[in-house]
Amino acid sequence: MSIEENNTNDEKKGLNFVEQIVYDDLNAGKNGGRLNTRFPPEPNGYLHIGHAKAICMDFGVAEKFGGTCNLRFDDTNPVKEDVEYVDSIREDIHWLGFDWGDREYYASDYFEKLYELAERLIKEGKAYVDDQTSEQIAAQKGTPTEPGQESPYRNRSVEENLDLFHRMNAGEFPDGTRVLRAKIDMASDNMHFRDPIMYRIIHTPHHRTGDKWKVYPMYDFAHGQSDYFEGVTHSICTLEFVPHRPLYDYFVNELADETYRPRQIEFNRLNLTYTVMSKRKLLQLVKEGLVAGWDDPRMPTISGMRRRGYTPLSIRNFINTIGYTKYEALNSVSLLEHAVREDLNRIATRVMAVINPLKVVLTNFPEGKTEMVEMENNPEQEDAGTHRMPLTREIFIERDDFMENPPKKFFRLAPGSEVRLKGAYIIKCEEVIKDAEGNITELHCTYDSETLSGMPGAARKVKGTLHWVSADNAVDAEVRLYDRLFNVENPAAETERDFREMLNPESLKVVTGVKVEPFVAENASQGTKFQFQRVGYFTPDLDSTPEHLVFNRTIALKDTWEKVQKKA
Ligand code: ATP
Ligand code: MG
Image (cartoon, rainbow, N blue to C red; front, side):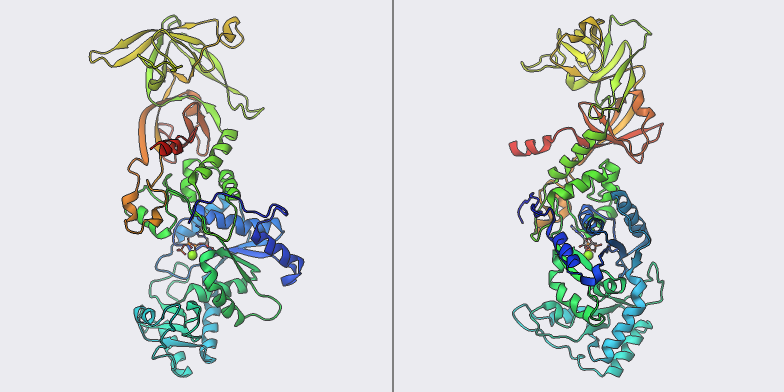
């Protein structure tokens, strides 16, 4: 896999290759000119950014050509599935901006019909019950260059097969003791045709059908038929299903008449640097407490990204940028972060917050006085307006913005130097106050009272501008600073190591005692997007309350990380 960042959309027509196929089918009048896609998640985990790519395709292509898209839960394995996942999947798709109307379906809706089809195939001599274990069956599968071995149970009578299949479903046999297999061809070039398993026995109750069934269809025996039952015309999925396509068509052929037939089309999965996309691994992180939950802001899940402050538009823009191809690729997370910055720059309200505060006393500012200064909410939007921020004799600035012995090009505050307080006056550092150990405890500065916007001295130039808050009015907050969850570029490729060894121990830093301007505290409702000026983009976390404000750093203002990596 190589890093591929190009949009390989067909520039001429502006259609990607899947859209091109759909467009051609519609033009040719296939399926009576109908277009119906589906998004088929298995409710065995939360959706991640890879699913978002599939969602944008399935719903997007339907939207583009006036078709519809079904939401179908592929709930064929009760051992791993749960309603919690069903609910989260619904929420995440809606949040991304897509809707399935009343077309919410479940593979379990078709269990009856699939069971009937299985019975029919048994009667036609096209399926048989195999009493071997899955290990024995796998051992007989052969290799792509050597034919497989036929099961000793392959030539059972129809009567015996039907009887055993019914008894499998009646709960007479324990899990794993028998399966129903399609009788196709143990010497086929396509491994999926070597008598694939259609049904297995599972005694765990199902979240929708309870204990009605004891046999459950495999993906290959459920997916194409479910598409067919729903009238799906274009069944769009990822490249790993290419070898399954002949089997998909084989089972559909057992049902379809000449008028209509669903068509499977495959595109490349989304793989992102510095994370993993496997639901199994993500579940492990959650179960072992290595993250705070599926919606931990470091997770590549949709719910994690929402909690972190990513916007639906930024995710959709990112997916548009990487595009859809027929080649597997590894996409750089920096591209996603770029899309997030771009959208937040457009919509985030500019405010002041000091992460690591250093007190500054403005010695010539009257004691007890509060002056309200005007702050622009968003220079990127004409009608975003302003808000007012208090200035008092004591303020906080960022500790990093002061240096006692600065190098030449340090344009921030130093003994005897001048800077502008963003949106307010120019100040000059007159004195550095230290404690007995020599730590700087506060600065004494004077302010130039003629330098506020609109005043005669407003145009006076100084090199640095600092963010600040009033010490009397600032509100305390906690901020959570996130970094990449893994410290290797492609954890999935490092097969020699356990993926948990590659977790970045610095992926979360919690900072308390942060000082935010009162306007931030007043507007810290869920979903609000702030730019803490000169610091980054932040949003209130789900844990935030008026008594204990908590903000997630969605992303820093600049991509410093890539640069650091290159130097290292
Ligand atoms: P599982 O291993 O549980 O099957 P999955 O990631 O394939 O995991 P599904 O719930 O089956 O999960 O996926 C639903 C749909 O999302 C499928 O059509 C699948 O192709 C698509 N999808 C899953 N992962 C990605 C990805 N990384 N990029 C693009 N599409 C994806
Ligand atoms: Mg899958």
